Length: 312
Image 1 (cartoon, one colour):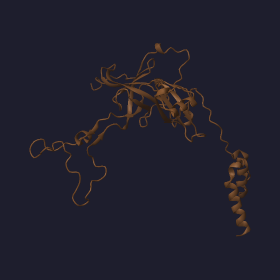
Image 2 (cartoon, one colour; image 1 turned 180 degrees about the vertical axis):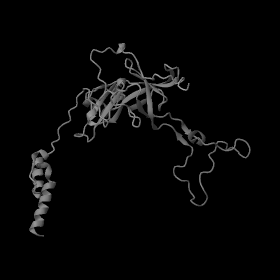
Image 3 (spheres, one colour; image 1 turned 120 degrees about the vertical axis):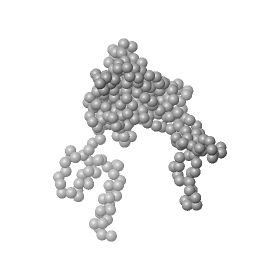
């Protein structure tokens, strides 16, 4: 082996041992192989992210955090034009930021949001240690929401129902109701077998599930009887009809996954993006002297055209 090859291998080994060498020394050593002049401004110094609880300016690329709510049930309301609106009521039960994840520490930018209250004796020791390390009260449910760096919030920041605006669209995620083991007619909407002549104890059967000797098997993914429900599903483009800041309640149009009392996770809609000028960013910060009991519910704007008279 020539002396030049041995010297090149020594340089590679020197670079591989690099953690004990300062960053600026490694950079200057790497730049010995180029003829360009060295500029100290090219060194990227990782500065810690400064997170402050203050209003900001939302950009088209910004991504806000979501919230956790409890499904209270369904009802119906009538808008100012007399149209019936099916409503699901959601309760934001004391949402606060429990953990902040940054690029410097975890490699991502995300917020962990907690909802509700829970006694310490009903939590595991790792869960209790997590809440104590963050300095936040014990929570019933946790959820991590990916956000952009400009939407980070300090630990302990409250996220109320005013994080969302009436008239915008949201995506709601939850665990569907468990139906147990069901047949093909209920689970997949099959029509079933003949109800009278020619069927013997096979009225609700799914029929044939395969072919003959070729291929001699049932293909994977065949719709058959099995467990129905109890899975995570997301309903997209749910319209926010009304919010009540005094009670932290939200009225949304239509149904959302889950039974009464279950947790659902709400975030800004991906497809029907709201107007960034109407959203509080990164969240709504309530004034210190504000009385929540005096706040009135806010209803979405229904427009100035009567839908029942539009055809005339």
